Length: 393
Image (cartoon, rainbow, N blue to C red; front, top):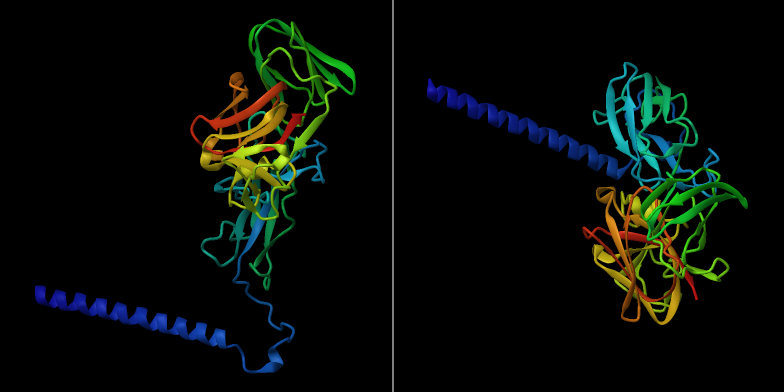
């Protein structure tokens, strides 16, 4: 009996192998025939006559953008956001899939009536929900959208939506934080008029910014300063005496002028400075690179700390280090801490720790009047992204 069972098993395996070989041969034959093409020229450009079926697949996409100016529409000032989670649910509310937006700001859900890998496979109503980061605002008011998919024979996927999800705009959380060495007063200004005033006690402070605030002023013993606010969070570091004057001439060093190539090491001489361990790249150079996209303010090149190791820029002649935009390169490093150390000759004049996000830059503004070298490092050796370095010469 055992011998008979063994013979049957071997026969079954041989038969299965033969069937698999036949299937492979047929597939190979079809591929070869397709590769050769059709010998009949009459069908080269003929209009399609049969419109049944639909065995392909398409991306059904939800688009998310950073609404920099907060006006609720995708405009020239705004940027696609990478790394934002969008979830799809069926008409019964059952969870189907969660997808992160890519470098172009698109969360792509595979749509197909025939492909098993498709998320959206049947007619019906579907809900698409954008996961809003803590503290951020949905400027378009449509983080949840429901749309219907219908069967459309002859369409590439066999299905089509009544529309695509409308673009979802997110405005970054805005706050100002820092450390006061002594009592001070922080005033928020909107279009030249006082908006709010807060008393700062010695120690750390964190103040949420009203939407209208476009400037802050700090007054205190030796620490008076004014700063034009960006659309992002602001970190002032330790409020040190002798800040750059409000009327000082400022110069922005960007990184799009480093190279026409997608990627290159930042050369000495760029922006009149020497550089070590900084590279410049485009936001599209690395796939699924959230911080390289979200921290790219000009849609050109940004700089980053090469391999996450400490990097420096310097010059023999002192210069003013006003501010820089800092972003964590990856969502995997959300909350990474950057250490920015500034020297004047051999003297360490400033050392600040800045908590980074890959979703949006932090405007670090130490406003140091005179430095000769600045060193940027990260606590866990993840890459830090830099853009819009502002100097006073």
